[in-house]
Image (spheres, rainbow, N blue to C red):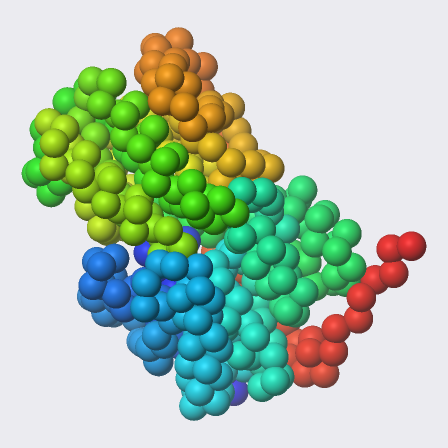
Length: 385
């Protein structure tokens, strides 16, 4: 009989990474696929991206509300609690044989906690990574200890998972599945992308994504003010995507919406869609902000990235990344350096440290063939002493 594998997606950011794996699992002869949709996907504020999942034709097994009443830290925590309740009920109804979680968001942590008393094994993608400026750091490593299979994106991360006491047979270094999607996305003409965004996309074009650094939520407004001031000081068309549903995201959205309302040739867009975002990675001249996309995906396009602040501190990065602090002068200097012809030229032939764009079939093979049963569920920790 086919094994039922449930894949959890909580935001547009993880959905893009999961699409190639969803395709590989859908086509696997030994797998019956379920999709659990939660978090920002269900929120109109973040573009209600569940509609994109529906349009893509994926079978939505259940929808789980995890968004708190506001972006205050206490409400974010309450949303995690609601997520545990919602995922527990959803998994009890759907009874997947295995669930797949990606990354480090607290909504994913809620799903893992819900699966624990139900004895449903968890496969975790993108474990072992480091982001010292966000609570994601703790959530990610907690997910590692709650999970039974580990599919990290790079060998350095696989080594860290083993160092955390996970049995080596559970760890399979496969690469980042999100890179697979770019090989199959049809090229979108720049004129079509410009029409969709509503900007002429003159050179230079800046792609901006800025999230609160959740270990310093009280600073989100001030830090975003520095970014906005820097963007006022540079020329070019600016496309801003929404932050994730982290604590203090409201301050970021408000400031960047104000920038888009007053700075010529600036647009702020809740969600670009898979093809739109991939096209913008190809067409942009520089990415600015603190998104993991700048470290994981942008290297595949040789796209310069100005990484602002501490959120991605500690994460593996390629030579396309220019790290700067929050002061506007540092951000402007980083943008100007990234836009020099010599810097872009230096990125020709850049190798992405997160994989070769063929991760999804490897992951599907592991998930479709691993032995389900007591050996998988009963974790034993390696003594590192």
